[in-house]
Image 1 (cartoon, rainbow, N blue to C red):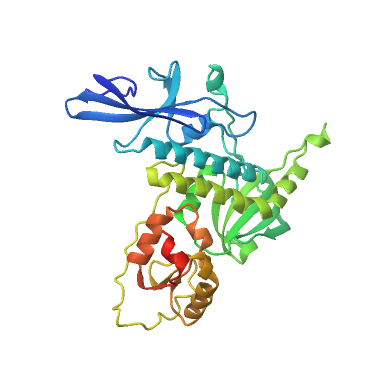
Image 2: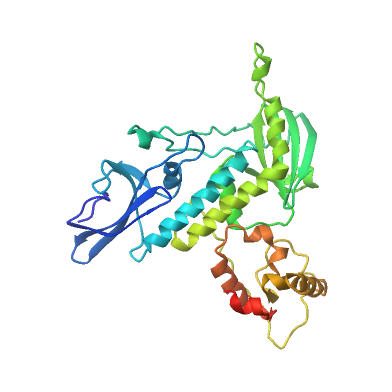
Length: 373
């Protein structure tokens, strides 16, 4: 009979063991009956840094729980895994993803976007969790409508536009940062990353972007009449100014970490893929362009043609992609949809694009193309 204990059973067997990136893993198979097995993974971190996200925090985000452990005395982080899990490749993926996750977290912190540290350093000192909890501001309004709303700054990068407004009244006093992607809509992975960071809301008719939708965050004004240096005006402006160079970099690194973990059925994101009915492709004999569809933002459900090429042929592929798109056809060329590809398992994604979701595929065959996966 099974219990919720992931450390004991009628029979326990350590089936694999590996150390990777400062974490010692043991894969343990619990047998609760003749044909009743459960595979568990027990992780014991052995190193930490003096600041920032720790391996303990990352393990927590990946679904591990800290508890007393018979396999890593006295404690470990443990969770269930799939029976066929390749421990060596999983451990390597976690290590690689953690480095990208830390890089992304540092970039986002420069923008004033702080990720929780639920575990911190407690594990390494035999004490309870000593992490950081970020208290997100919860304004009374919608971040847009107030007696006084003043546009103070704007900036952009390759992928996003940012607007900084001052709001005063209706129960709120502070700054709203507005975010609008240049190529909408973005992937469900992107929305999952915003949910993970926390504090983002969606406003459908943002006046800062010609009444198109935006994501927004509110930073309340903090004032101390006794100490002018306790006011957060300077910090609020510094955080906004950093968005032009740090925001996309941070998000891209988080989503790259997710993409490394996804093939192993692991992640720190809760991605809810939209289930959409895919239309039947037109006959291959019909190659008329679907007029009016090539300007549709975001990643289309179907493509008339997908371009497959090695890096040496990118210039030629881009020239062809633009010509075919301008003729009114739907073209898959990765340079048209960079943000929509963030966070995806590209091996399975490209397999679907080239094998199922495109009417035709144009291959730029070269020596390098033959050598690439």
